[in-house]
Picture 1 (cartoon, rainbow, N blue to C red):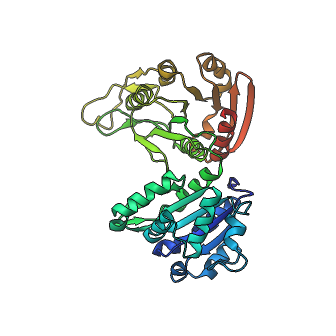
Picture 2: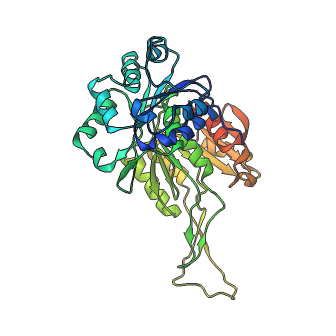
Picture 3: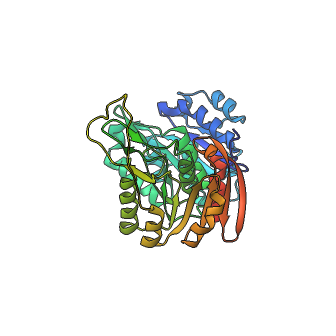
Length: 379
């Protein structure tokens, strides 16, 4: 599968400080480069004691910087008109957080930070330390101060008494968001995703083959573009707010509550929401016997959302005649209908047709590529 070049043409300074999480930076450098970025590593003296600068020279394909010389590397990359587009500090220790917040400039990393902040270029900071250090009031206060300066903070994973560095995918996603220009900043996006599971008895459920891959890809792309994203589903999507549900009734309740209480600007109905709910039986239906199960139709959530808050709405329609049915959905208030056929369900790639009142646009590729095409038409 082709990896979208979301960072093509961008130069990222990967600044590394003296946390044991520095060992993860080789993986991070590779991930950024796979997305098309040019990566330049900068290490503090403490970081160079944990991971060899040669390892990051290999990972980036460029000599790692361990000190600022007469070539004024910090100005070349992060000064006015500099070559770099983003300063990514990962991992960032409590010590470095405090220095940046107070304007102290005594390592290669803090020198790059001082220069980048003075220029006003995007900065992403990824804390990593022991949990007790992360909970220190001064550290918390410094992080809040940096947020107020416009620095994006990627929250750590709290595990085993440590505030561990975020997953590599999450860091890359934050870099993509910082460099996107955030055209969806301030917009509230609500996405329903994946399958619903309707109980037949205390053991069995009626469901579909939907994996939620499309919904997660849409959520990632909306986050990249700067939106405030909420996903209602049974799974988990990184960097966004997840509301867990199982049944169509739970999904309906969660979505309409979100509409009424917080408002929604853009609603994407990518879930395979149950059309029917079986009449549930108590206990377990005995095996080995023929059964008649009554299926009761469920109300359409899409119609209820359009009536409730009139967001810009994207509907998905699955079936061999999906395109033919798209016109009726546009007539009910959908801004776009994404038509696809059953083979696309659960597959990593597929063929889709984006139908609007202006016409149709076929799109073929990975779910991530299709999600990008959908958002390109909505912006």
